[in-house]
Image (tube, rainbow, N blue to C red; front, side, top):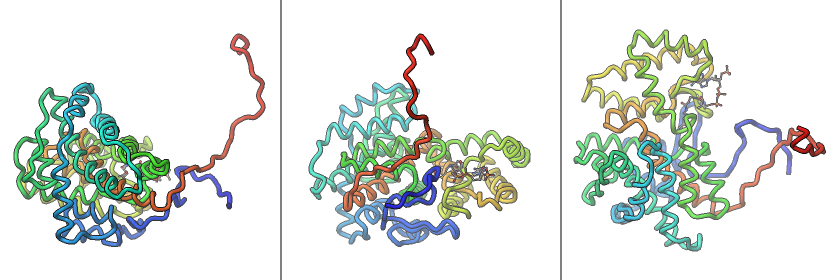
Amino acid sequence: MVACEFQPGLEGIPAAQSQISFVNGQVGKLEYRGVPIEALADNSSFLETAYLLIWGEFPKSDDLDAFQEEITHHRRIKYRIRDMMKCFPESGHPMDALQASAAALGLFYSRRALDDPIYIRRAVVRLLAKIPTMVAAFEHIRKGNDPVRPRDDLSYAANFLYMMNEQEPDPFLAQIFDTCLILHAEHTMNASTFSARVTASTLTDPYAIVASAVGTLAGPLHGGANEEVITMLAEIGSVENVQPFLEEKLATKSKIMGFGHRVYKVKDPRAKILQKLAEQLFDKTGGDPSYEIALALEKAVAEKLGSKGIYPNVDFYSGLVYQKLGIPTDLFTPIFAIARVAGWLAHWREQLETNRIYRPSQVYIGDHSLAYIPPESR
Ligand code: ACO
């Protein structure tokens, strides 16, 4: 084995061979199983895309119907999970609630052999089905209300919006939300996917894998950035304030949330699609300046930081879309998790195919052979 130099953040070091997704950050290209993200956003549904990611091929019509039916059937969560969620502090972050609830699923659905296709299928279905229900349930529980039961006659996206708002959504809004889920479903070897694969490599259960990935996604440098984008746009407040805000951030070497990406050195292709969705939503509903401020900020950042390859990432416009859909800011990252569970599960299956437990090395830079000093002499 050839020893290689330490790379902070493992930048440029392949952590797996994968057939799940492909990114070319120089030209802004993203494909799931070889299919361009634009084609999926225009033509597919989230569940069809999840099937494609997890099983490696588009489902035939009957297979898609069966998959959707199974997921609809498994949307409900056990009373004991709901009761456990009632014990969570209402001030807790929904990502922490989701991480705990996802891990708790593992207590209820016992482990079986990882080469059992029925177990794998059931775990995939349960996680895709129940995570949205758990996210919506915590939203109601923290307000002191009972969760809204899922409705079997609604699509995946429409049912989630229904469970959140207790009213059937406009089909246009449900369609937009479904497209957002497609865009967030997978993105090569990012931090949470790496976390999922490391956990999967120990041959633990898929609920532990998803819980581990949710914990990783929660950080502000990963999934948490879209929450911060909304706070930032509110702080800017007007198009006139964009320039002074940016100058001040650059002077203090602060990061502008929703910009920059380890891989993309041009505008993230998902941000392009999300921008169009945001534009449609703001056209339809109007009423606040955030979209105009976002456009002005994008232009100003491109002028100042474009030469460094700093352009909007997926989080920049997704927060605006979710806000317009009436979703509370601290649920943006849990919604990211609802979508990304498809990618994590695809990586779980792929990891199992040729598993070797992750065990990287480190470069020790500490001392050696120091004497033990008793506490009273320190
Ligand atoms: N605002 C201002 N400058 C930036 C930004 C930004 N958002 N992002 C990177 N830069 C600058 C850095 O200051 C650095 O400049 P320097 O070379 O003069 O020191 C250079 O660009 C390289 O940046 P790094 O931080 O080294 O890039 P890295 O690949 O490590 O980080 C990251 C990528 C974490 C996404 C970073 O761009 C960032 O913090 N962005 C803001 C948070 C964000 O939007 N996160 C969501 C990412 S998408 C996702 O996770 C789904």
